[in-house]
Image 1 (cartoon, rainbow, N blue to C red):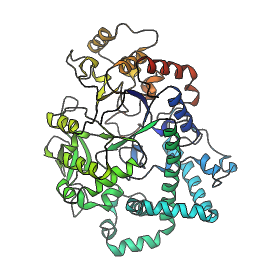
Image 2: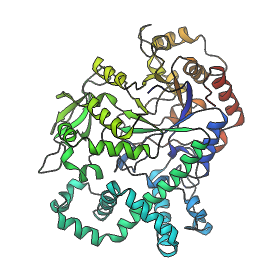
Image 3: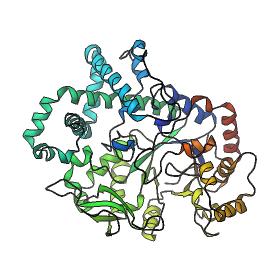
Image 4: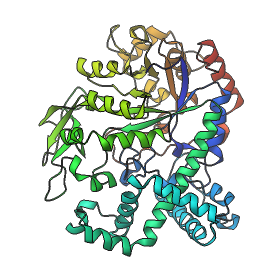
Length: 501
């Protein structure tokens, strides 16, 4: 579906300022929404919100439907009388510009456990009923997820396919035994999800009341070590003996990598999913649309055909393309859920078949300005080549360097092409020049990473693809969202007719 001419900011909640070492759903989140509204933005784009494991990547979550407990605000738990001010008396000094994930987890998890104990002891009848209603409403994924996380904790973090065969294979007696043994741990996991979605729903309501819509991100694949795969092994391509992926996801060799990218996620058994009327996918979309307004499908091309690599391969070189029933899936989702407010991440080598699938449902694709220079005037990411308004233009995404960092690393040829297009670098800086290009383009939507609004360098980069550690940690300081910044963004938004209210 086409969207109105508008603009917004890309920022993950972990990047908010917070005295607890990692951004959360507390006061800074509400002040950021105020900043969006005051600068006439319509969208706030986030990364996946799921609970993260090794590497802290939001794209490798323990669940496709759960929320990350590290985003729960202890301050709001205090406001709900589940914690007290003295619980925060001995907080350490956290880095202001970066998340120390290990330190933040070590501080926040005991606070969350304490809040859970207080809830058990003091919750009113109304609060208990609200909790039970939440558990009932989300039971289709929450029961499996809570048990999965409780067992993982009891197994010292081992992946589910390394558990004893009876529980790895979900034998009924084993499931019953672990549920009895881990009653308290299961309750805690459900409490965390209850608090996450309670706080997130309040924040989303606040944003929507100020006419801000939230764009969520749905990775096409789920992590191998996840409640989704453990609870639904019949829809994933797994080795029945070991639980390892028998078919792994990735992309083939290209200009950027001679061996391709081997992601390691198990691919879907699409024929089986189709026989089930795509029930798991419908529930996934339904779950996500309950807490975001628009969905960006990451690696959209995988819904048309996907690169599958056999078990045992160490690179993505020896794979093959296999057709996927994307059209049938999306038609089913539309029939059951109504309109599809979706953005298609269609970056990379995209075939006419993928474009046809995108256009069949009128999904906007993506245009990245960092990709626009150095390959001639026919480059599809150059704004002069946006033949349809139904697209979303970004300066860069979470996988790109910041615009300032990108500009500093350009080759002489790319820099020449860029400056031939823009003119000399002005006093306002290359980041504001590229923001102007995005906002002035014909693309219906323009989305800018907050790092680019702030003119930050490579040390503020969110993610470097292929780098296993050291990503996802950037944070901003609260004082940087100045009135001057609001006014400047507001002026450009109005100048280029992107104000929607």
